[in-house]
Length: 459
Image 1 (tube, rainbow, N blue to C red):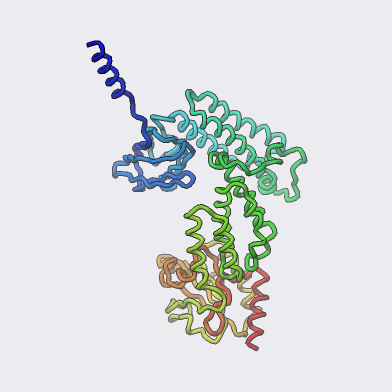
Image 2: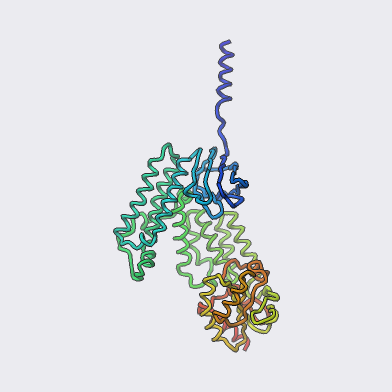
């Protein structure tokens, strides 16, 4: 009988023992939320979470590791630390997301700390001009005060996750390094002292000797990650006068990056900038990037960019625009301009950099007036900006041929040229073939050299 009781007790103990979960439940309610989905992102992990009409949501996450994540509700980003086997609940009001945000469940203390830190840092950043205008001594004192507040709050957390504590302390150091690193340029900007230089002993030793060789820290510290990306991209673009003739041998600094995830991020950004059909080495660059990247999403984007770019190489037939409204009256198609070089400026009235190119464009138009070239400005303004488009043409006294694209960003010409940012300039030869799908801007002296070279061919 005693044996039976012992057996029954053992069964009861085993059955009552909590089963270790291999998933995390994330739920909550966001009052006054307008978006229908939230997006949780961390490293290679990404998951869409549906939000009900009443603002409630609940989802099961299969996470492989404890790390920092960003949970996006539209433009509002919530920073979180999440591990597997957890239950986390979030409550907030979308109209005042950060100040109303509250966590319950696992890692609630850690995540409430992160949100309080965001609020504190946001309030500090709003005084960026005041902080960066300080002299070196006052600046150091201010930044030390900010770090000490965050560190004190971190150290007072009860039962905090050891992994969280370890990497958040590291992150606080790199957040300080970031503002120190920005000080010289920001101080110049806010104080208008263009000749300002920091003192030799201004930068912390850790910043002077910084190395980006810690994959775990890159994964866990947003400040370390952003600094690594910025420093690496600075090296990539430091000596590049033009992206139109860059070769893989010019990008050895990418091959030398020690953290693979950092290399993926750098290639993701640099690939968009450098994998251009205006570069005759585009195929070699694509091979170089593909050999150095491991992230499948980045690799797929590179391949998509390359496949589109192959159709836009020099000498390929240009995509056509058809029956675009002409400000001077009627409609104009690209085929109407055959027999001339066509320099196309893709722009919009809301685009500051586009408007900034207008004075230079006028100078180039004047320089090549009477020659075998047509200057075409194709606006991708939407129909509700029609009057603004007409007014700006008159106000800025825009010359050349002023056209309005038939469907804004979705115009076939814009899509075929893979245009996802403006201004964009395109040069097409008299036979309707591409000279450059990403031609120099009017403010770039290379444009005049290119036009002179092309027009001399037809003499």
